Amino acid sequence: MEKIARTEEEATPADRRPQLLFVIPAFNEEENLPTLFADLAQASDLLGEGSRIFIVDDGSADETSSLVEAYAGPLPVELVRLEVNQGPGAAFRSGFTSALECAEPDALIVTLEADTTSDLGALPQMLEEVRRGADVVLADWRMVGVSAHRRLLSAAAGWVVRHSLGLDATTVSSFFRVYRASTLQEASTRYGDRLIRERGFACKAELLGKLASMNASIVEVPVSLDWTRRNGESKMPVFKTMLAYWRMLFRERVGATDPVPAAPEGALGA
Image (cartoon, rainbow, N blue to C red; front, side, top):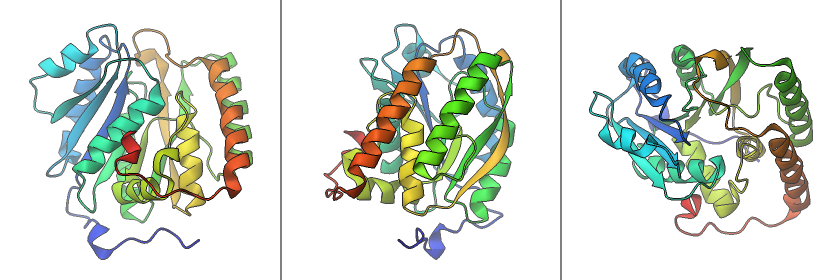
């Protein structure tokens, strides 16, 4: 398959700020939202006209939704509300649908953890990689304050996923990424409601594998992942996520030769 084609309109001039559409899943993150908003405000000079920040509340039991709705600062923050907790897969589907509905041809979609563990200081470099031609830019984790046990499990799961899906990437599960909106739209058209089927954290590896199969240009940028900045415990169940990786890999291998069905209207948000 040929590499994803881009029109001249999608090439963002160096002196023009792109439309950035943030998709940030949040589950019981009331303690971290003030810091998240402060971090985003420090990066507000990167926001071009029409930029928006979608906080996807994944059925939180705390005040996450209320805090987003009450936000009165300078950022273009909007709430996407899922009434019941469904996992990151559903949160990303809903967030991507909202983002693509308002995306300009050269828009970029930025995904991010709501717990403030990723360093937004790396965003300018990630945006520069898109300007140079990348379709997807991944945060390549440099872990800070992460236990050796969790590091080992993450590395092992990442190795299996990379080699099974043929991915030339080091970090396959980080939420912190930059996508061309046109690349996600093309993927949605191609895969329909099969684009993201994993409910849990394995959804990021699943999506990356599908984009790689479309010959999307994927680049990594070193980014600090600092768990000492987060309030509360991690929402990622390690062993459950590893089992989800194996399930996802089995399904992708079995379904690799299946015909891709035509995408129903609104499939990405299904």
